[in-house]
Amino acid sequence: MRQNAPNPSVLGGGPAAAAEPHAPDPERLDAVTLGQFLDALPRDLSVIYDAGNGAVPLRWVEPSELEDPTPYLLDGEFVLTAGLPFLDTGSEPGALADIADAYVRRLVGAGVAALGFGLEPYFDGVPEPLAAACRRHGLTLVGIPSSVPFAALGLAFSQLLESGNARVFRQLADTNRHLMRAVLSARPEHELLSALAARVPVWALLIGADGRIRARAAAGVELSALQPLIKRLLAGTGPRVETESFDLPGSALVYGHPLRSTKDATLGGLVLGTDRPLTPAQNSVVSSVVGLLELLVRQRTSGSLAPSQLATALLLHPERLTSGGTKEINSLKDLLAQSVSGTRSGALRIVQGVRAAEPPLAAADGPVRELLQWRRLFETKMVELTDYGFAAVTRFKVDDALLQEVERLGWRLVIGEPTELAGLPEAYKRGASLRPRVQASGKSLRVDEVTWSVTGLLGREAGTMLAGRLLEPVLEQEPERRAAQLTVLQSWLRENGNWDATAKALGLHRNSVRRQITALAELLELDLSQAQVRAELWIALQYVDGLQRQEPES
Image (tube, rainbow, N blue to C red; front, top):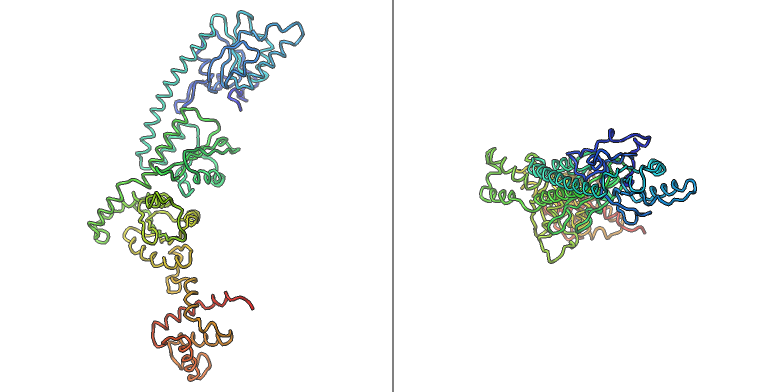
């Protein structure tokens, strides 16, 4: 819809000024509108037809006596004419009506906001065919008496525009004060979005690097519908604005602004929705909010004094974790909360990453880029680069979407269970015990989903490998003989080497059991009297079925 589009509620006729006030909304930032301009003009001007578009921004006041001025016009202009295009229409009936209709239709198509008609020197009144065409096509028509020169109208608009700019600057200064107060609040991201939505006609979503919503203001498009835009936003690089359009109220125009680190990593995004293009002043507010959000997210993932304070406290006073008083413990918890973007009481997790493939990081950036990458993805400053990969303390649960993103980068994770400050060292040890299994299997693990037994910790991949190496001489025999020997060995180990109990369980003579176990010891080249050997064989036997399932059918 062009800016001069009429208000549907007033197409039936009658002035729209009473229904639609022209005074600017002090909570919004807009340009000078047509209604404000008309209100500022001398009272001897007459609005012959009001198309109900008084709220549209007015770009300029332009005199023109051309039959077709539209090639030289921008949308939103107030065109002034003394009627020269309507002279010399001839004596043919209806000629003036046809000329006026074509003229008005061209102005409306060019997005003209209003037409001002001067009553001298050519006409002493507005021609009725012109007024009828304006009513028919929805173009505001103003009669201008000879006492008001066209130049005076241009001067009045310039003065109004100048005073409007001063008002906008005052509003911008006031808005910036509100934004700074929001940044210093307890919930800066939420308060920033609320301040934005209060002064610019948008709904807003703050998206984290994981694609999840961190804060919102006003109702907008559902997150699921925004996924294509968010995917482009988080995957791109450099300054940019992603756009989309939805057939929903307040969402005809949807913009995605990336939040970027100093090294151009995308730390998240601001998604805005509106029904009309934003004015320069409104875009200025949006730019300020984007800049402040970038500072906040960079502070979370890059610069902060909290980690150094926490490290110093624990290096000098490690006993505080176990024997410190309530005040000391709470102080440490506060520092940790600032370092992992959480709260003092929020649950923590230790995530350990091991390389499954060489990560695609620029060599020139070295470990700095890698460190910032993990800080960004897990929204924490508590990250250590290690010989096996990295370890991070985070408040994230690490959902499947984030896990898949990390795995696409060539890494596998050991994701710890929830814990508190004092439990972090033990949680790290539990996760570390699973790293060999992750390295062997090439699959990420969640500590709270692992069965804490030897077989559970070893995992099927490593257990199958153990069985294949340890029992290889037995597994190479004919299936019938192999099954019999494995049954005897498993029964004997289950009965803890008791000959009589094994014989009874198998229905064999004890001497037969002894001969078969002796033969197995020779075949395996193992000393079955050693407890460690027996334990390893028992563990290996738990994974023999997996080996047998892998055998090709004959």
